[in-house]
Length: 114
Image 1 (cartoon, rainbow, N blue to C red):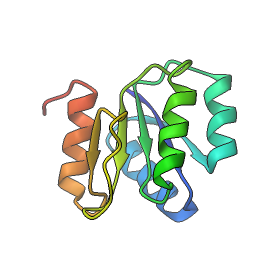
Image 2 (cartoon, one colour; image 1 turned 120 degrees about the vertical axis):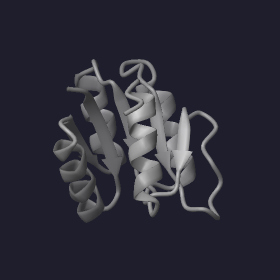
Image 3 (cartoon, one colour; image 1 turned 45 degrees about the vertical axis):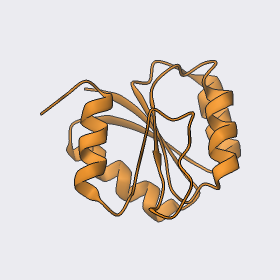
């Protein structure tokens, strides 16, 4: 079971993502917003993957990655819409509207090719 740190600025999307990942058998710690993400990242590490929701502004995504890289030290999956700029600090960027691509990216970054 992987430990996933999921961050979003939209509570509904955050909860939906959490349920989907839990159905896949993962343990999920969710943070709503910049401040909560920083606080939770500072409190713990040992995450296998960090997911940044598309509702997070681009520059905030970059700042969260810079901050959490010191403690979390795990791959980052950034959710970005097709017309949005990708996040170069992230291991992967996928469109959140493409569920199959999202699930494939999660499996790939966790080392599960199934």
